[in-house]
Image (cartoon, rainbow, N blue to C red; front, top):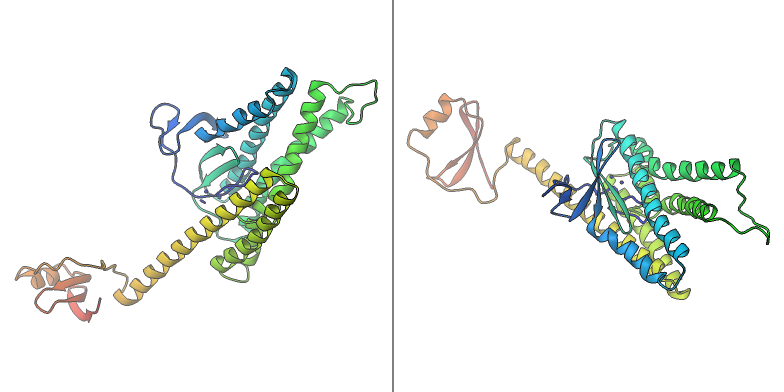
Length: 324
C-alpha cells in the first residue's frame, strides 16, 4: 500500500506517488510500465523491471526439466497475481473511507497501491493496512479447502507421486502463507510496520510514530542481514537492504512534508494567512497604488518600495509593517 508512499516483498508499500499517465497506449513513460488493464476499476501496471524475475527463474532452472521450468514460471505469475489482489485489498478498504487509488504497479519485489492519501484516523489506517494480508490469508485458505475437497493430500505414499497440479497448488498456498506472515512483521514500511505506526500515533505524533516504526524495522532488517550472511542466503540480504532503504525513504519524505506544514503554519502566524515569497520582487508601486488598494478594499501584503518594507493591508487599510 507509495498507501504514497513504498514496497514490501509482499506486495505493499503504500507509497503515494503521482498517477501514471500513459505515454502511448498501455505504457507509462515515467516508470516504463506496461498497462495490463483494470482490477476492480483500478489501472494496473507491470513495471519494466518485473520481467527480470521470470528471466532469473529461467536462468536458475535452465538445467532442470521442462516440467520444473514450467512450474516455476507459472508460480511466478500466479504469486504476482496474488500480490495484485493483495493491493486490491488495500484499495477497496481505502475506498470505504472515500480514498481513491490512482493505480497499482507490480515490481519484481512486490507491488504498490498508490493511494491519494492515507486515512487520518489510526483505526482506519490499521483496517486499510490489514486488508492486504487478509486477502492472502483468504486465498491460502480457499486453496487449501479446495485441495481437501478434491481429496488431494499433501502427504503421498511411495506409490503415489504428486501431480503437477498438486505441487502447483501446494506451492501457491505456501507462497500466500508466507506473504501473509511476512507482511505482518513489524518492519516499516511493510504492513506490520504500518500497523505499528498507526497504533503508536494514537499516543504521539505521526512523525514520531513513524520514526519509532522505522527504528523497529531497522532492527528487523539487521536480523535479516545477519541471517542472510550466516546461512548464507542472498535473498535475505536483498530483503534486508530493500526494507531499510524503503523505510528511510518514506521517513525522509514524511519529514519533508512535516517541515513544509511547519513553514505554512509559521507563515500564517506572521503574515495573517498571506504567503510571502522569500525574495519578493522589489518593484516600486505606481503613485496611485495606495488609492487603488484602498478602493479595492485590498487585504494582503503590498511592497512599499520607498521604505523597502512589506505592508499588511486589511480591507483597504494599511495596518502594519511586516519584517520578512
